Image: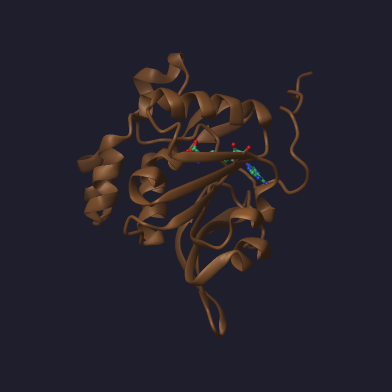
Length: 211
Ligand code: SAH
């Protein structure tokens, strides 16, 4: 995975490549998906959500430009995988998930993979950030918003970075937003496809379409 999917496609930060090599991705997928854990794809994790493709996780981490001591926020915990990779790269990781059932399984996944004590898990609406733990040097968002959530920008340190997929189901770009004295400096990087970032109070699994 590290060589074929990441380095070959241009991921060059050795700390990110090492982190991706260390986190056991099979711990973050359901038992029936274990054989596919290292596939070049997003995989279903329940509740209509997915664990992100390894390349996207690595790209987001690389764009955050972490050195090891930072406090970071991961929005959209899902399986907990991205939070675990961030725990390898930063000093303090907060992660927030709106679906309580997914947050519980992420908690179990993180503990089983040895990250239980290194990741602080919150349940709630991540579009509002985690104001009580702000400011963050970096914020990673794993779900697509129509625009970068203003609260996440406000919770950045000066020169802090927010990486967020922006767009609708029709098309999204991964944006890197840097907090500067002049306001947000936005860089559009690559086209991408993420599940939607859903604002509003945390809820349970939505009812399946077929009832
Ligand atoms: N980083 C995850 C990817 C999960 S997919 C992983 O590595 O597995 C995106 C997640 O964002 C889903 O679990 C979804 O429930 C969650 N999400 C969507 N809107 C959210 C919001 N407003 N606040 C917090 N989490 C949200």
